[in-house]
Length: 131
Image (cartoon, rainbow, N blue to C red):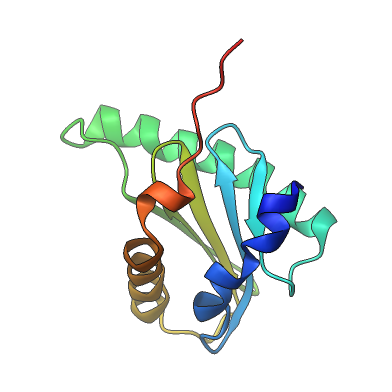
């Protein structure tokens, strides 16, 4: 994790403050961790970022095949013990949230959207890598 990602964890605290939210991270489209909350240990954040990149890619492919072709806006997974939400957070970035099982999915999704808008997609965007 870079110094920038350690310094920007405050941006995610409004989401983390929602009752039942366990982990919040921002990741690049290729699965690299960009930002995490202090409540999410680095090893958990790295695993979450890698898994969410794959999940977001699958959601995008399904959206292209069965949707209107615009791509996916959000992927949500319900599992025994909670939910996982992954949504775009600027060019090349994703915002991922893991929750407890007893939450209001609409509230979590709404807070994620509000946070992306408040912080700005530009701040959360991942710069294009050059070779």
